[in-house]
Image (cartoon, rainbow, N blue to C red; front, top):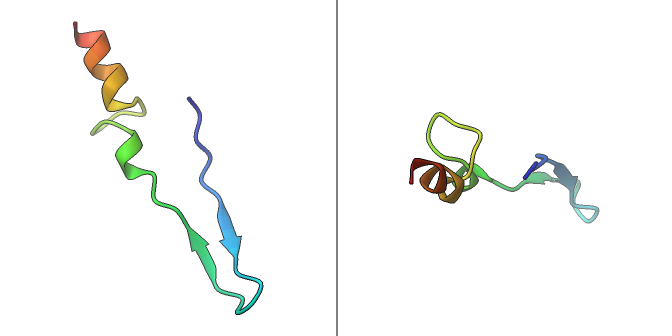
Amino acid sequence: LHVRRRKWRDSSNGEIFTYSYDDLTAEGSKLSPEFVSFLKE
């Protein structure tokens, strides 16, 4: 799974916003927590 971090601009007021994807990866890793637990089995 490859998640790209994007920025969007609100056309009504010009404000730039992003979404936080911090919960998709395990601590100190680029892998998802579910995949890490699968590998540990």
